[in-house]
Structure formats: C-alpha cells, structure tokens
Amino acid sequence: MINPEQDTTRFLSNHPDLVHLDVIVIDLCGNAVGKRLPVDSLQSVYKDGTPVCAAMQLVDVLGNTADPLGYGFSDGDPDGYAKPIHGAPVGVPWLGNSKCQLLCQLVEASSGLPFWYDPREILKNVIKRFDELPFKPVVAAELEFYFIDAQRQESGAPVAITSPRTGARESQGKVLSLDKLDEFEPLLTAVQEACLAQNIPATSMISEYGAGQFEINLAHQTDILAAADHAALLRRVVQGVARAAGHDATFMSKPFPDESGNGFHVHVSLVDEAGDNCFNPDSKSGDVFLSSAAAGLAATMSEAMAIFAPNLNVYRRFKPDEFVPVTKDWGENNRSVAFRVPPSNPQNRRLEHRISGAEANPYLVIAAVLAGIHHGLSEKLPGIEMASGNAGAQVDPSLPLTPWHSIDCFANSRILPDYFSPDYVSLYSEVKREEFNAFMGSHFDREYLWYL
Image (tube, rainbow, N blue to C red; front, side, top):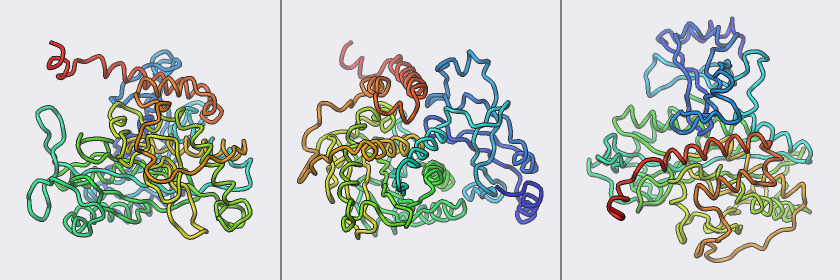
C-alpha cells in the first residue's frame, strides 16, 4: 500500500490534469461498479476509504437485490467502505488525462474486515486451501470478445462492427488472421496501451472465428488474486477503448446466434517450493498430479456450471461440434474437451479450463477451477481416461445445460460448499434464481409468433 500522505502528494503533482477519481468495486456478476470523486479525495480514500452500499456485491445483472439471506433490505441496506487493494491509482486513457481509477474492496464499516460474500474473498479462501498441499497454483486467463457497432437493432440486438480499414460491415471472422489484426490495429493498439497504463499484463492478441471477434491473453501469475483483478479490469478496458473510438465491445457469450461464442479460458499449473512444475511429465508424480487435477475438475463441473454460465445466453454456446465443452472429458492438445493439456515444454505443462462464458465473474470462476483441482489432488482422485478425437460430438446428458438446472446443481452441491461456504452457495443461488425468474417474467416476441 502506498503512503497516503507522501505518495498521493507525489502522484497528484505528477498528474496535474487530474480532476476525478473513479473508485471501482467488482460485483457478484463481475461488473465494475463504484463512484466518481474529486481527485483531491485520494488521500482520504487511502486513509479511511469511501462509503459504498454493501449490497453492491449481492445484486443481479440489473443491480437489483433479492435480499439474499437477509442482506440488502432486511439489514437496513448498510454502507461498507471501499478501500484500495493495490498501490497508486492508474490512468484511464480512453477518458483522457482528467481521470484516474482505484480498484477497491468493500470492508465492513464497524470492523474494517472484508465482507465474507465478496467474490474476491471467496477466491482468497480457496487459495488458502492450497496451504495444505506442497505446491501453489499459477494462473493465466484468456478472454474472447466482439468489437461491435455503437448502434443496436430495434430489438436491442448487436450490429457487426464496420472495418476501420474499409468502412464495410464485418460479415465473417478470420481465425488467427494477421491481416485482421492489422485491420483493427488502431483499436487493438489502444487496448494494449490502456492495459500498459493500468498494469494489466496483456500478452498475445488473436483474431477469432467471429466477425470482429478477438482474444486477449493475460500473463501467467502466482498472485492469483491479481490475475483475477486483471481479468475483471480487462473487460472495462476493452469496452472503454471501443466506446471512445465510436464503437462498442461485448463479452456476452453468444451475441450473434450464428457466430462463434465468447469464452473465458483459465490456464492452471502447480509449482513446488523450488519453482518446479508439478505437472512436469518428466517428474516422478507429474502425470498422477495432472490426472487427479483433471478428475477433480470433472467431479465439480456440474456443481459449478451456475458459476461458469451465469445467465441464459451462456448456454447457447453449449452445442456439439462448436469447440465448446459439452462433456466432462480431458485430453492432450484437443480443443473438443473441457480440460485441455495444451502443447508446451515439460516445465510449462498446464491444464486449460475451457467451460466459462466470457461474462462470468473472474474471481468466482477461478475459485471454482482451483476448488476442483484442489479436490482432485487432496482426495487423490484416480485419473480419468483421456479423450481422443472429437469429444464434443454429443452432449453429455448429465450436464446441467439450462439455468434452472445449473442453479439447482449449485444449490444442492456436495463438494463446492466446502470451498465457497454453504452460505455463499445459498446466497449466490438465491440471487441467480431471482434474476432468472425476473428475466422469464417478461413476454418474448417469439411467444406471440409461436403460440398466439
């Protein structure tokens, strides 16, 4: 943490054009919420924090509270204090030189302790479970997204972006196309520069299958909380840069029915105290650890689907032959499985978890992935056979691939409550069940076309 008196004075003197400070908290749905303050509030925010409604980490995607477990209405809707997580503020390049931002965590007004239901706290508690084991996780995230037009169709549906080069509407993607990266170079460079300004370790950028669809990879990190912070903030960066350029961007899982979906892939390896990869096939137990970790992910996959796929749209990704997992399989260098072992040298061997939609909460997704791996290793689960060929040709009927089924699986789970806590499982299930009920409470145009 920076020195509130000395370092904030230095920061402000080095950035004389600053006018506003954005205090950011990541909510249950993975969205950045918070408040905008005069920049001269910076020192007091470091010292005391700033009041923010404590229920903000309990709300659904529209910001509504279901009063889960009596939090939100029943307890009088109290404030907490948003307190900075990292060091100095960072710039917000897409908004010019007048604004900076701080990623914060909500703490209780009385005790100063983080709220137990903060998704970042849920992840922190799962990470602590690895203290029981002789190795620690290393995590990297990949997120897919679409650049889209700023305008919408009358129905609210997205419109494909126009090419910065030709001005023509994008009609198809070109996977791994360098030409497509060149075509969108102004936007992608602005994203890269914004990531640099915000200390988000973006590495490679890839042109994906969809029209205007791209993927950004983040660096592998031993600081798991920071990895989740960066994944959460990356979405704000991409959307902010796109909007500043007169476009927009979406991490919605399936914004275009006939185009490729947006995924959130999590890469995980394990290192021992010497920094050696525990999945290394040349080590004595590398294959055993890897197969037990995959078995743990398979054992928790159904229970965690409500985390990986938090809304109705995400489930539109799960179709056969779409390079989206529809079974509990794992495999070597095989994109049709749920848990892939990418090709790498032995010291970089890892598992790639390929299930989540890109809009899922990064803290909760990484928590669920690590919980599955920890379960497989601590219980020494026997390895499951690797799949070969196309594992995604048929859907596994045991998977909960509807919102109502996945919420029930999470609410009645047996393994994950030990990691997330029984109360958080109940709370999250209640929030998402009420969100889905509210969504289904409105009529759809197709009802009139089909049933009138």
